[in-house]
Image 1: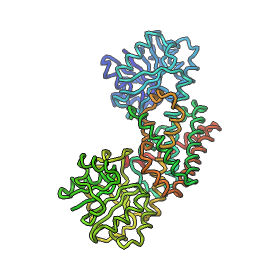
Image 2 (image 1 turned 120 degrees about the vertical axis):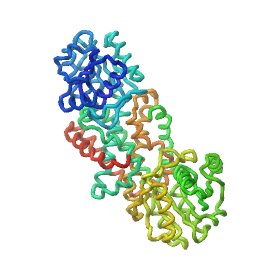
Image 3 (image 1 turned 30 degrees about the vertical axis):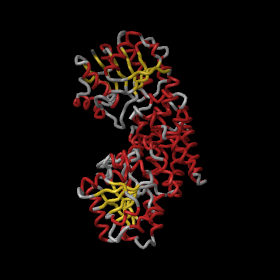
Image 4 (image 1 turned 90 degrees about the horizontal axis):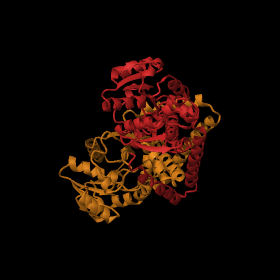
Amino acid sequence: MNVFVIGVGLIGGSMVLDIQKEYTEAVIYGIDLNDNNLTEAVELGVIHKKATFADLEIATIVIVSIPVDAQLEVIPKVLDHINDHCLVIDVGSTKQQICKVLENHPKRRNFLAGHPIAGTEFSGPSAAITGLFKNKTNIICEVEKTAFKLQEKALEIFAKLGMRIRYMDPISHDKHIAYVSHLSHISAFMLGKTVINKEKNERDIFDMAGSGFASTVRLAKSSPAMWTPIFKQNKENILETLEEYISNLKHFKELMEQDNFSEIFNEMENTNYIKQILNGID
Amino acid sequence: MNVFVIGVGLIGGSMVLDIQKEYTEAVIYGIDLNDNNLTEAVELGVIHKKATFADLEIATIVIVSIPVDAQLEVIPKVLDHINDHCLVIDVGSTKQQICKVLENHPKRRNFLAGHPIAGTEFSGPSAAITGLFKNKTNIICEVEKTAFKLQEKALEIFAKLGMRIRYMDPISHDKHIAYVSHLSHISAFMLGKTVINKEKNERDIFDMAGSGFASTVRLAKSSPAMWTPIFKQNKENILETLEEYISNLKHFKELMEQDNFSEIFNEMENTNYIKQILNGID
C-alpha cells in the first residue's frame, strides 16, 4: 500500500502516523512545497520517502492536506496523475468550492471530500501526533460521487483511526462550520489583539492572565497561512456569523450600560446550556 | 489553627483542601448560606465542621470566597466578629469596591485583599480540588494596609499552596483584569449564545464542533451568580474593553467585506504574538 501525503503538517502528518501503525505494510511518501518540511518529516518518521507528482501513478491513497486555496489547484492535478484505482482524500475546512471545482473532473469518482474535525493550534511536521483523530467527527460531503469501492477503502481507514462519520452536503457543511469553527477562530484572534494592543507596554500584566484567558485565546496561535484562505472561501457564511456575534456583544454592552444586570444574569444562564452541548466534545 | 471558609465552593473549597494537607493540625470550619453545600462539603472532606458567624471569635484565619457583591456586606460583618489576631483573606475578582468599603473599618489591618488567578468553569463544593493554586498568580492589593504579622502569615500560606505573589493597587487591578479575565468570559458567553441561537433546531450540528470550539467557549459554562456581580462592579472598565473588542471585530469584518485578505493575514500573524505571552500560563 503506497500512501502519499501532500502537505506534511499537523493534519496530514498525524493521519499518516496513525496509518503507519494500523497498516504496517504501508509505505508513506511525502510531497510538500517546502523541502525542509519533507526532510524534517523523514527524520521524525512521519513519512518514509520524499516524492513528487510524477510518482503519484504508484499511489494507492493520496491524502491532500494543504491550505484550502492551494487545494483548488492541486487536487485536479493530483487526479490527473493517479491510476484508476487510487483514492484521493482531502481534509479541508471548506467544502463547497473544492466540490464545485472537481464537479466535472473525469476522475471525480476517485475523490472523497472529507473534513476531519480535529487539530491543535500547532503546525508543521513536528505538530504531527498519533491518535489525533480518535473519537473525532469526519464530515464527508457528496459521498455518492465517490466510487463505491473507494468509499469502502476510505471508511475502513477512518474506522481504524477511530473517527465517526457524518454525511453532509457541501453548502450545509460550510454554513454550519462557520459557526462552530470559523467564528471561534476570529473571536480568539480578536480577543488576543484587543488584549495585546491594550497591554503591550505592560508585559508583566500578563502575569494576571489565568487558564481561562489561555483557553479562550488558544486558537489565536493558529496558522495565518492556513486560516486566511478558509476565511476567503467561506466569506459569506462567516460574515453572517460575525454580524450576529457582534450584535450579541453590542446587546450585552447595552444591557451593562442600562445596569440591567438581571437580564445579564439570564443571558449567561441561558448560555450555560452549552454545558450539555460540550459533553462529549471536550 | 482554626480556619474558617465562608462560601464552600470552587475557590474557597480548593484553598482549604490544600491547607488541610499543609497544616495537618488545622481544623476547617465552613459557613455558607446554603446548608446543603455545607453538608456536601463535610461529606467530601472539604471542611470538618459547619459553623456560624458567632463561631468566628475562635478563628485564626477566615477565607471569604463568595460573590463580589455579597462580600461588600459580609466582610465588614466578619471583621466585627473576629478576634484581634485573626487574618481575613478575600479572593474576589474585583478589588476596588471592597477596598473602599473597608477603608475606615476599625479592623482594616486584619484584612488582606487578594485575588488568586485560578479556577475552573465549575462551581460548588464538588468543584473543590487540590493543587488548584500551584504556580498561579495571587494579586495582593493595598498590602501596606494589612498588619505586618498577618501579611507574613498570609504569605506563608500562599507559598505553601505554590502561588507567586504580585502587588498592585486596586484601581490598576480592576482595569487590567477586565482585559485578561472579564472580557474573555463575555467573549465566550456571547460566542456560546451566537452558536446556540443559530443551531438550536439542529442539535446534531454540534457533532461538527471540535476541541477548538470547546476551548474557546469553555468559560461560558461559568456561574452567572458569580459573574453578574463582577460585571456590575467592574462596569466601567469592562465597557471599555468591550468597546475595543467590538471595534476590532468590526474592523476584521470590514476587511473581509473589502476582500482585503492580505491585511487579514497580517492581523492574525501579529496576534500570533500571543504564543509568547501564553508560555507559562497554559
